Amino acid sequence: MIDSIIVGVLVGASYALVGVGLSVIYGVLGVVNFAHGELLTLGALVGVVVFRLTNGDLLLTAISVLFVGSIVGLALHDLVLRRLAAAGASATIVATLGLGMVLYNTAVVVVGRWNDGQPLLYRSAAGSDVSVLGIPFPPSVAIAGASYSPLRLVAGGLAILLITIVAVILRATQFGRAVKAVAWNREVAATFGIDATRVARYAVMFSIAITCLAGVLIGATVSASPTLGAELALKAFAVVVCAGFGNVGATLSVGVLMGIVESIATRQLGTSDQHLWLYALLILLLLVRPTGLRAEQTVEAL
Amino acid sequence: MKVSAALVTAILVISLPLFGNASRMDEMALALIQFTAALGLAVAFGMAGEFVICQASLVGVGGYVFGYLRLHGCPFLLALLSAAAAGASAGTLLGAAAVRVRGHYFAILTLAAGVVMYECVIRFAGVTGGAVGLSSVPPVTGALGTGTGLYALISGVAIIAALYVYILQRTPLGRGLIAARRSPGLAAASGINTSGLKVAALAVSGTIAAVAGALHVQFMTSFTPENVSIERSVILLLIVALAGRGSIIGVAVATWISEIVPGYLRVVGEVRFALLGFIILMTILLAPGGIGAPLERIFDRAVRVISKRVAACFA
View 1: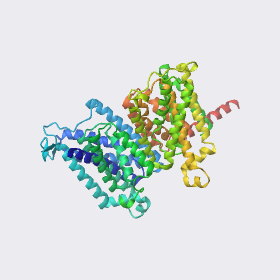
View 2: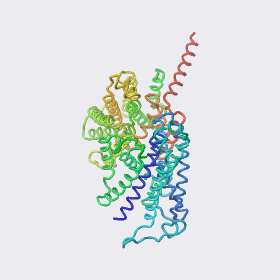
View 3: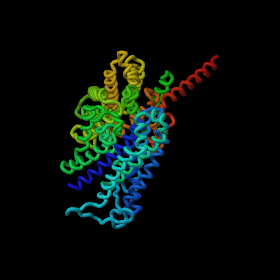
View 4: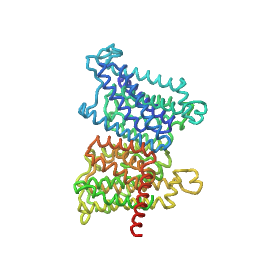
């Protein structure tokens, strides 16, 4: 039971982080990034490589993937999103869908060549499963009589830490306030001396970086495969719809809650129909509350 | 779209078989079917502005209804009409949803609808054949029994669909649709029934897609769940978006890029889709408004120059 709650928190944290990423980009640029799931896959796959190279150091893996994610975010903003800002939402959607196709199919080809198309596990070459800054963890950790995978425990701890950091950055820092201002009104924010383009650039970098990191966390808990991202992105959409676009606090809580509910439900009910019911429920929710459970774009809550 | 562009479109469509030998006729027929399905989406997305990310599901509705009926002894025409009716109903349902759910939320709704459709196709194996799909659909008797006859029918339907969209764009109905997209408030204030038009646009889109699906099933004599995958829907949306709003020649060229060009480059499977995604990304970066408008300008200029030369010869 505790293990399925840990998995639930981890999966939910990924939903929440991907959802926050979507929300932040939507806030500052007014577009939905349809390549988000594939960028998560990218993070998970880069993470596997670094994880194996560093003999299972999850912290080093997380830091390197954050770096890679920021670079990718910078490229995405400067080469794609900013250039298409004037052309309208349609062009941006096309570009991000196209980018998603490139990333997904490249991932399928690479994983197919590398690992015969099998999902990649976060396993280090050394005997120990996971270590942090060179200090190895025992192969299993016993808490109250039951044993748990240390990789999952460390990843769970990182997920909670990350969610806290993201919430603090967006609520209490100068950067978070600038993002909120640009999301509310770009022109007014610019009048008050905020460089809207720069804020948008940092916001996209931030959002892609945490999405890639979410990929590492989910990859470490389950496994990394090319289809990981697309599935997760759809669920992140569901989370963002429930919480309302631009509502970061609600996105984080709804995401974690959904992960825990899903994990327990899967354990109790089996896995066969979960997608069908989840998306049927999402459609029903949208038909009943066309702009999500919360009111659209509540800037105060961002 | 100018007359010259329409001409070039028609020539491009009809002459598609000339680009390859008989062994590549399958590819050409499938490209024409894709063109038809994309034209449906050109009404829903290009004119009405609704982000429908489940067009392949509508194609699938037509395909599975048609295939099921044909496998149970139903004549060709009746099965085709039933498929069209099923597509119209599915489109109307989507339209009713579009009236209530707007913008990005509607895009997400259609994405979810596409997943639900795919999962249902896998589950209800009794009707759809499950993961294996439908196979050995009986051939039509008479002139349509041959591959060439069926190919002629497919090109005919594609051209009729293109003409239909071309004319629709010039009727009060089509102009109302475009007005309702550009400025919903003003359109409604000037007496246009924006909700009704939206439903009608999606019903038309569903009908055209379903007919395309039915033709696909008859031509290939089989249908697999892969045809209703999200990736197919995304490709259809990309074709229409790449074309630019409401440009039929844009749709034709974009279909050509997505269906024929990868075949020429001899890439298959995932590499093909990766390449396609890259081409689309680059094209939209170079022509953010879509390729339709620049293409129309180029063709217009070409026709003007050529007609001037021809006139000079006779002067």
